[in-house]
Image (tube, rainbow, N blue to C red; front, side, top):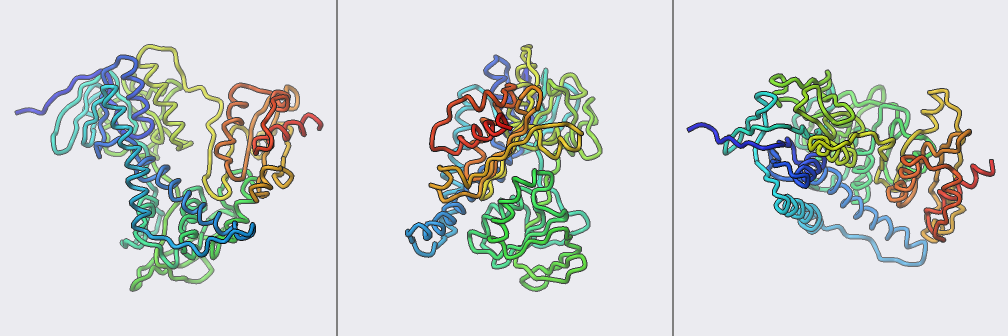
Amino acid sequence: MGDLVIEVDVAVVGGGPGGYSAAFRCAELGLETVVVDAGKRLGGACLWEGCIPSKALLHVAALIEDAERARELGVDFGEPRVSLDPLRKWKAERVVGRLARGLASVAKAKGVEVIGGRAVFESSRELRVEGDEPQKVRFTHAVIATGSAPAGLPGLTVSSDRVIDSTAALELADVPERLLVIGGGYIGLELGQVYAALGSAVTLVEMTDGLLPGVDRALVHPLARRCEKLFAQIRLGARVTSLVERGSAIEARFDGDGVAAFDRVLVAVGRQPASAGLGLEYTRVSADARGFIGVDDHCRTTDPAIYAVGDVTGEPMLAHRAMRQGKVAAEVMAGRPAAFDNVVVPAVVFTDPEVAWCGLTESEAEREGRTVKVAKREWAAAGRALTLGRSDGLTKLIADPDSGRVLGVGIVGPGAGELIAEGALAVETALTVEDLAATIHAHPTLSETLMEAAEALLRG
């Protein structure tokens, strides 16, 4: 007997945020849609081994830190005791599991079938599903939403379960006494803070001269100060030249600065597109040397029948970008006018303190030779920040000096990830500094710092 053949309007390859957003919107628009996912699950890396579990653990870390800070207010809960089994169960069942069940329920309600197996294109109109039940899917349109995977460390290969990536780190196999984190980007900092709060002595190594490379230094500075207190050591402008397993430890050698032993090593040097082995050579889809698939503002690839969304299409590798792209692709496939023409994609680092930004940064303006007006509002003078015992925040506005249009917003402090939504709205809708300043913000709130920064720009 031959393979089972399914014919649909849209085949979505990958069940992550971009994939399920595309599939759900396609179904709403009357297109018969299936999702092919290797794990026969929706949510992708974001839900299962990325955004959601990491934020759950960061919440736990924040609780521990809040309990410590409470002593300054005269409230002492005693030393926290962390039990890993209940923590793992809560993360897996109450957070990840609950969201996964919700997505499955939505798919069922919308009539979106999820097929388990590895999808490989055989042409621009057909793909093969490899798995326990091999089958073929013929489609009018396809969406590649295969996401990304943790990148390895070039030149450093060691076969040991003591050297882990972000996926393994989120499993919480144990809390190592000594943890080396390689990479000072958002993944390394978020997971480094989680393990530091749980009791690990964390050493972080970053090859550049600062944490969160590429992010506004004014925003990074409060976070760097916090990390200096939390981590056992931070090595900037340094590289790990070798990793060797010796007994029950990993020996790490640093360029020009000796050797140290660690119980585990977390490699957090970024992510790479998951585009290999998709059979793209049997389509007209083209990918660059790194594996990223190019798309236009309709999320269409160089093959008119095939679209791509999310991490596999390049930076910024953020779930909310993927979700927006997925919806755009669905609208276009249904014949509606739509384009991924957003001005900004906000970014958030969920550390303590949180760092968030959107639009033009001061350093970008300098590189472009662009004249801008800049205002900073320190949270040390913000009433709500002081009531929270958190004066270590900052709100920063970038504006055009002629039109007054808000071009960029940066925020560091507790809740920055929530506050940046107003900044993104301001930039996306071309609001002016005067618009922000004239909008009444509730008092006392942290959001007032946006209004006050805008007022400072008007006075300037």
